Image (cartoon, rainbow, N blue to C red):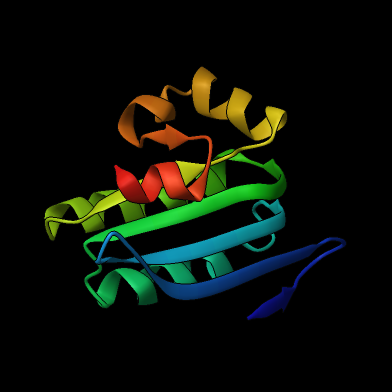
Length: 122
């Protein structure tokens, strides 16, 4: 799925994967996630949470910037997934995104892993 809002391009790609026989949903987020495209991010994450995955992994390696509104969308999806008995993991945030996760302590709410493989293994 491609979304073009504002100046920068937000790219969201969703695939179903499997690791050690366990399925998971991988959402690759790249570009910049901010107030101009948070609704696009919300739509994609809400659609995936509605599928009731046991694990949803957000690959942030290509995400250059994320503001608080986009972080809020991710935390809401995490909360909804948790209520369903699922779990979310974040993978490979770039330094600017990792700093936001640390400063807001969001990295304590959603586990952060170095690789998709590590996140899939739990």
